[in-house]
Amino acid sequence: MSIITEMTRAAVSTGIKRKSRGKGLISFGAGLVAARIATRSIPGAALIGGALLAKTIYDRRKAKLK
Image (cartoon, rainbow, N blue to C red; front, side):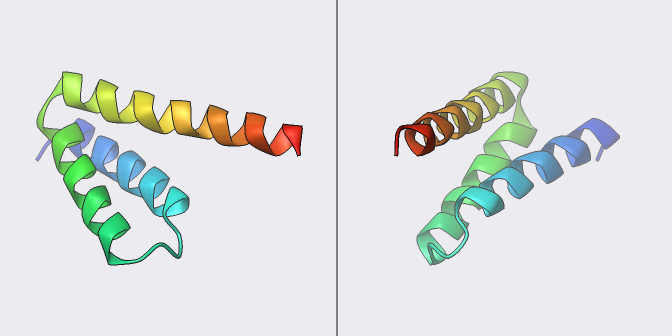
């Protein structure tokens, strides 16, 4: 595997692991699928990365409103 593939897989799996902490086996499976999609294609990486970014922004705004 190329270094770019390994870096993408590490970044996506770390982000998903951080988001799904304590959520169980379904989140773990979703993380595996997302990492696989992100490492297979550039559009997949953009989609998964964009979704993670949108979720992070949403969570931060929601936390500010509380």
